[in-house]
Length: 147
Image (cartoon, rainbow, N blue to C red; front, side, top):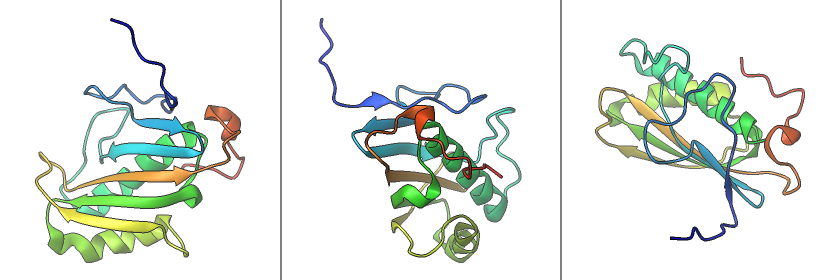
């Protein structure tokens, strides 16, 4: 069986991040778009999801999103759309409080969904738009720090 040539490619993983636990890429580049799979509060070094506190888990999840974007040559300022999955929709206000620590106006479009998340409180996926000529680490900017 031959594999069809694709017009997109998996983005590199951040240094120290393990491969995904399933058959998917953490992020893919398609032209000037970066599609980031759902990021969770799992610490990439230890696998720990931390305490059952929405703000703590949201912060870790958004740090993970930032790291995956950076490895793909993008940053939070390049994000045009965010999808948020909350285990309890009542956590919306707490999530917004943390979200505005990471994203500034003008905000990307956003959808929030209440759902079951298998032991975590939040998951976030995103789409970013970057310079089509930038790829992987070539797209890094010195001001893109993780913490």
